[in-house]
Length: 595
Image 1 (spheres, rainbow, N blue to C red):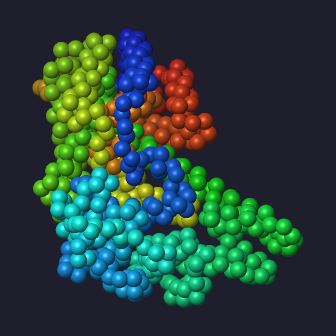
Image 2 (cartoon, rainbow, N blue to C red; image 1 turned 120 degrees about the vertical axis):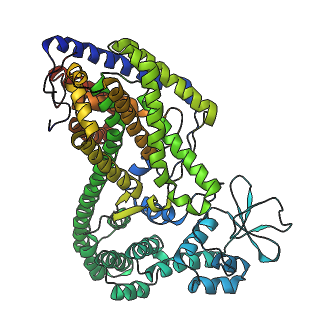
Image 3 (cartoon, rainbow, N blue to C red; image 1 turned 120 degrees about the horizontal axis):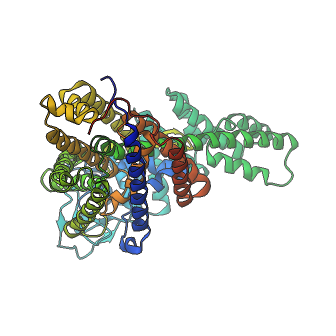
């Protein structure tokens, strides 16, 4: 028994497979109709900093700065302030000193920042979002978008508004000093990623940049990636301000860049009148080289997005593969079990914010087992009460679980409301890894890929190396024989259904980190989960892996060319054609089966 579910269907059961396939198509049609209905119009999605649409736009320099500096700067607090919860509360907080200081002292502080780089990043973000205020005697306050006032650094909500509350604003000179002060602090950091962020800040303010600063930084830089970024920035300065010979020399460096900003500089130079022929030839060569590099980076970003989407699909489909493969149950409530996992994560987050505020950044570690257990328990209850009396009656099971899905959605609306709720991204999953100027990989997506691999390995071990897995495979192969040797098939059915439901809860926990959490969350993924199971082969874990990779990557690529709606339609048509040619999926079930 080295393989999962090693049995094959008899000729008589081939007809049952066709019936099951028809039922699946009917269920998919019902869900498509429900998703397309105007009932979703009342939903007002919250703007997440880690949504799918945002990920696809990260392959730009602007998103590079936002993802690598903005997202890593600040943690979400209980009132959606952009202030960081990790700044040490002290009597001499650098931000407090800055607010209380006059113009000259502020300029001096920015030239030689007395606090940490994180506190300076926070100051930049607070001023950018118009949240920093000064009260009587120079006290510091934070005012959020809901007009709620907080003391700083304690961050306590207060109703005693100072009579002379004034917003902290900066003159152009101070704004320039703030930008370059932030870059200077980061350039002096021991972290190469911080220094790379500093180069990005300087590149966005190249018009005001002192070339001597870049030369000095490049001379002292030891990290190869940062040194390359500094050399490209130096070449941009030479290209903008140098003579023809200097511009041609700079283009030999810029041709190895994949920065959209550099491409804009080159195109602007080509649009000028009376270009030197030699310079024009160098510009054209550099333009072709940069465009090719940007195209490669863009497609790598698309493939990464497809891989992360495939990981999400696999998490959503693994539990369905187990319940469908073992019990033959078309569980239309599987999407709502994913939703329950996401809401369990939301509840754990709120509990940590209320009772363990100093550990809020680690709520996700506690949410993972909670999401699994809550979804597993609800799944076992559904199996006992709803599904068990309907075994062998596929159509009735489909309709019953569809009704359960509607009940669960309505219960969530009654408890949490119809609007989406916000699950904040934990600090250590915020931001992104900057591969190049036009390629940024979000940490939360990388974490989901790793999380999916871990769950997959644990599931394979559970099914192939444990006593419970042996019983599951025995019941799947030959239920009557398993009963004859003393295995309680009813108990195994319940536990296996709970395992599949728990895996759905883990999928919801992961999805909460990359998208909005709402009552209709499960409906977004249930169709794709069924497609993964059918294409991969019913009950086949490795088939689900390959199917999720194929559907995730191909879906992402198709969306680029023809849009999201048409991509879904094309994928559905391709899946139907594939099943017509290979009804058993990628991996056929092997062995004997006895009802």
